[in-house]
Length: 116
Image 1: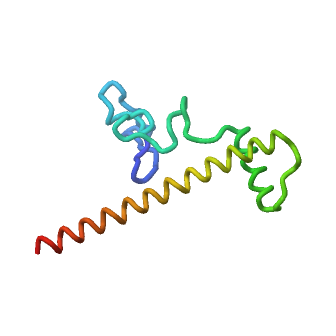
Image 2: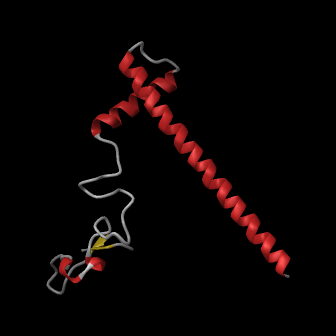
């Protein structure tokens, strides 16, 4: 079992790695298997990461953006459009999150000042 604060393998009295006691409940499950904790990387079956093929596609996109030129290829154009759409969506979500945080901070400040 891995200590999640130190990321070191825990060892028993015999010096052997401690195994997770899955039958004792979620607290003994790996973070990716525990629905209460979860893992940003997902699970081994459903990872939250790009496939090897998609990693190559994104790398090619980044190279084309850096060079300022894309090859005249319909597949490259389609992939670039999909990637740009995802990047635009992520940027919009970041802006919404920022605005939500700012509004929350302003509300809390106004309520605090009003109640004083």
